[in-house]
Image 1 (cartoon, rainbow, N blue to C red):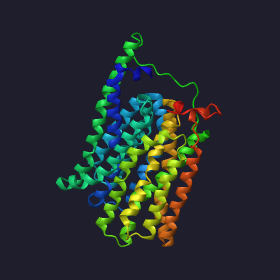
Image 2 (cartoon, helix red, strand yellow; image 1 turned 90 degrees about the vertical axis):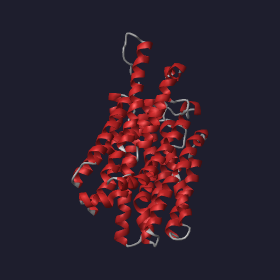
Image 3 (cartoon, rainbow, N blue to C red; image 1 turned 120 degrees about the vertical axis):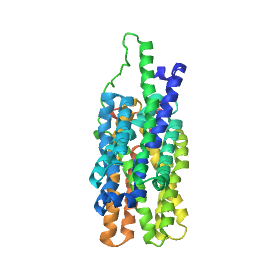
Length: 419
């Protein structure tokens, strides 16, 4: 790690930083660029209510599966090569699905795309841990902010690009953004090999040091705490992305305004994504920050339910500020690990279990509303999500790491050890 920190490695770190930020910018494009075009895509591919619902479930389900599988890929291939694999899958899937002539082929290629991004979700935190252990908060702030930027930009530009050409061009064009990620990481791999030869001419390639003891996240309290926390948080976000526009429209808000409210919800994530990783590492325990953002979620939920047509923007802004809990989750993947290996295990497990739980809630939200004919019961589920999220927050509040729990260490490590 000292070699990475040295001045001779600064160029390599800049390349890694560029690769991390570009990957973050591209992570959500394939997910959020398709829904605004479903009306046009459905004409050609004959989307039904069933296949539209299936499309909505693909992202969290695929992210969950590859959250659990990616740590094995990291051990086999290394972080950088695993990232290259993720980008290759994402690029292939996005380009190929633009040429599909039927809905199920489109969905199959969407799965390939999401496999790539699911791997990318897991790889980013340990990459930050590896290359920027001395600037975890700053770099996390940058990449979480760019995730929010990508989430907002893609749906905003998908329709204009389709207007200028057609929906196939619009869907496939985002592969160019993913392709750009390959450049700095290919350069980084070449630089890593060169540094390895300089450091050890006889070796020729970089040596990978295996951890002394494997971590089993399934029996680890820190891993389960972060997974539970992420599930409760992400469930609320997915409900908003899925149901906010149709709910507001049903309550009497114009269709265009309802869509704008979703865009507002997404863009409000920008300032909190920038702030949280710079502020929370200064706290010994993150629970106080979690509670502040939880209050924002609660105000937003109550306001949108009780007064959907009055003060709508205010309620959406409050809920949008609640997304600070997601930035805390990504930050904790490094603050609750001491090693790159531990960060990868924690990131994979938390996102695997977390997205699996989160992916079910938007579906249940609609089923409950339809079965009861009441939005009140559906919104009550958001209260359960808050409880789940706070339960996980309590479990990761103490400054201990996934390695400490795995090794049976009872002491609370210092902030310097955590960082």
